[in-house]
Length: 513
Image (cartoon, rainbow, N blue to C red; front, side):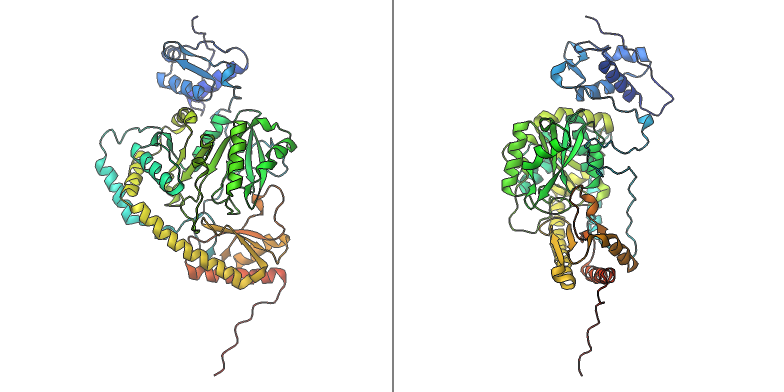
C-alpha cells in the first residue's frame, strides 16, 4: 500500500520551528482519525519536497514522533503510524509559537499545589550573610586547575571534536561517570547506559516526556522542591504528592493518596524520590523503605526516578548504595549532576538508564537540543581522569564538615531545646525548625533577620499538605566561612527574640579585675 498524502500547512512566519509544526500536525491527524494505526507515511525526501523544506526538517520530526511512540519504522518497510500496542497517543503539545509562560494545569486536585509560573530571580550574592541552600563553596573551586583541563581539551580537539557530538555525550566523560557511580554509589552500569544532559533538570523533563501520557500519574514526595511540581505539572499526567516520614516516602500510602486525588493507582508511571538526602528534610531513606518502594514499582510497572542531587557529600561512616544498584534496578533511573560538586554554571548532569529507555531518551534529547556542549564534557573528563575531581571532593567534604559543625553548634548554642534540625547527615543544607515559636511568625522572622543583614528562607512552601507547626527554614552553609555562620546565627537569634517578644540577649558581664 502506498503512503498517504499528508495535509500539512506550515507557518513560515511564526516562531515555531518547522520540525515542531510537522510533528504537532501529524499528531493532530492521528488523534482526529485521519491517520490510523498502520497507515504509511511519505518518505522523508518526498514529504520534504511536498512541503518545500529541507529533508532534515522532516527526519527530525519523524525521529521525535518515533520517540514519543506515535510512529514506528522498520528497515525496508518505511515509516507508519504505530499500532495500539505502542500505547495511548499523547495529546498534541502546544506550538512553541504560543508558549508564553503559563501555570501548569491543576490536574491533581490538591488545593494550593500549583502556583502561577514566574521566572525565578537570578541569585547574586549580596552584602550580609546569606544562608541560601544549593550554593557550593564557589570561592574554593580550583579555577586554575579547571583551566588546565579546558586547555587540554582544546589542545586535543581536531575538526571532528569541534563539530556536533553525540546526543548521549562524550564517550570519555560517560566512561568516567560510570566509574564514579560504581565507586561512590555501588552502581555498576556500562557507559552505554549513561546519558549526559544539560543539568539534572533536562533529564527529568525528557523522562517525563517519554513515560507520562494523558491519564497517567506522577508521584512526588511531600515536601518537595517547587520546581519539580512545575516540571512534572507541564506533562499530560496528574501529579500526586505522597508524604515522607523518618524512613522516606510512605510507599504504603501511594495507592490511597492517588485514589483520594481521583486517579487510578494502576496509572502511576513515575515515582520521584531523593533517597540519599530527601529535599528539603535531608532525611535518608531506610533500607526497608527502599526495598518496599522497588518491590511496589516493579510489580506495578512504574519507573522510579532517583535524584541524587547531593551524591558526593555525606558525613556518616555508613553509606547506603544507590537505589539503582539494588534489586529490581531495571525499574530505576538514576540522575546526578555536577552543579553542587563543582559549579552550577557548568550545566552538566547525567542519567543512568535502564536499557529499555536509552533509545527513547536519545530520540527526544537529539531533537530538543542536539547535544550538551562537547568541549566542556571533554574538560570534565580530563578533570576526573587526572584525579583533580577526587582531590576537590575530598577537600570540600572536609570544609563542609567543618561549616556544618559550626552551624549546628551555633544553632544549639542560641536556641537550645527550642530548635530541631534534620538533614545533617549529608548534603549542603539542613532543615531548621524553631519549635519555640509559632508558625505565623515565619515571615516576620525573615523580615527582622533581613533588617540585620541575614537572609534565611522559609521551608513551609515546600509542603503541600501538613505544613510545619513552627517557623521552619532551609539553611545552606556550604558557601559561608565559619565566622560568618557564627555571626549569622547570633543575628538570627536576635530577630527571633524580637519577633516572639522575649528579652534580648544581654552582653556578658565584665570580668572582675
